[in-house]
Length: 173
Image (tube, rainbow, N blue to C red):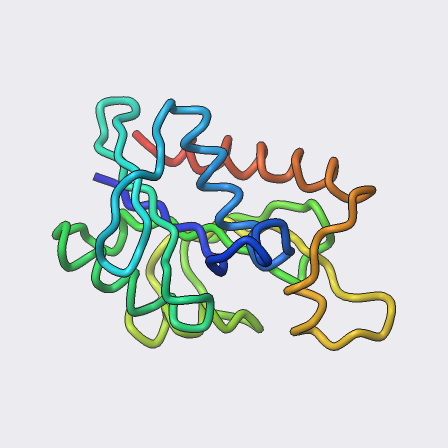
């Protein structure tokens, strides 16, 4: 069993923001595998599917970004899934826009959602980061990550999300 968590914020006003790249990535995984988010539990919206003989649980926490750790811990406990079978997908402002980075473990960096997850878990879980870049117009980070991705940048992120999906699926036996 693998649990794949995309980080983001619930609600239409956040749907296409930089901070919701994790949600967009798990939705793309669902699309690729023919699954759909149609269940609720563990403070998350859930989808279930199988891939390469492995049971896959996809999750979008409903706790809002900065409290993602509560949901992730509940998911691991409820489904009795070892932490090494967790993959978290999220935006990272410290990475160039559209760049993907994979890490086996590590710190939370500047990401509050990851900081909350690391508070509840140790740091030994896989992460796929989608580069969101930093604001270039003087905005503070919070208003930047919660802003809607401009139309002219969307092709960069569509490609990045596809690369993130490829990477996540490559991690499944």
